[in-house]
Length: 391
Image 1 (cartoon, rainbow, N blue to C red):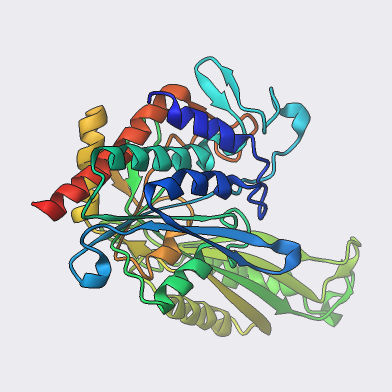
Image 2: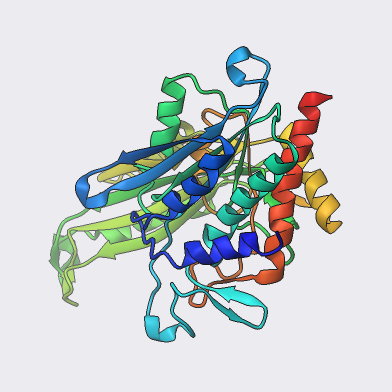
């Protein structure tokens, strides 16, 4: 039993599953789940040139949600991984699982094939001890989390909503731990909204500025105000909303030409105290007040979500404490995850996984000794939720 989660992690790492290619990882998972009574459904989405593979696997409990008395716990994750970067900088082949100094190396080791393997083995162990549970258990796995995220989890969630599937709890296996497994879980995430601002001017010779209109100079006072504006003050769970410029594009490449326009890319990471509509309105008010001739395009990448302490948080806090002795920290920091889609149809969503220090890096790895406790925490969480149903 001790090495099953490690072995499955190695199997998954050995698959070169760069977004959107699942590389048959989900087939491996489905072959483990089907004998346990899971109905496994493969949902393909996207064009042929970018075909995404999604897996929805569910095992109904005795108190099935359709009867109104049951509860469903979903484990969610992604089999796709980011590109490796320069291969010559890796100590070993990123798709050949390699052990050094107590660590398992490979692309996806911490983000997030270890979590998926731990999900599966935790479910196997739970069902071996509780063959007829009251709790329904499901897995939602995609190959489009590290990419555009338009044909992955969001598609599955839309389909589940359309057919009236009830989800009650969800654990997303993102790597959330900081120094020790279990020291942090995410009980929410900030929203993300991007803007592309084009400020228009009049192109001209740099020696005759009176005959031109420099859009960079015109934009600077407004940009300065946007950088210093307090959008909100956050709350007990969220940091204040942040506005950050990511790119500025202006000029023709020549040193003696005033450009005719400048393009500024920016992003909001916003708390639940703000809305996309409110932030857009304030931004336009600043730009209009400075008299700019501009065009502004918006993309809302995700809404904020928050799971306040309740059944799921209590269950996983107890599991972490029982396995490691740690009183875990609740946090909403960091980037976005597929939790933003799942939260639309599931009231309690948290993220929990291994240490995140090496994610997306050269020589990504996971500490081998962390795999077993991670799996046990997932299993204990299932047991805690099951116990709440059968009391």
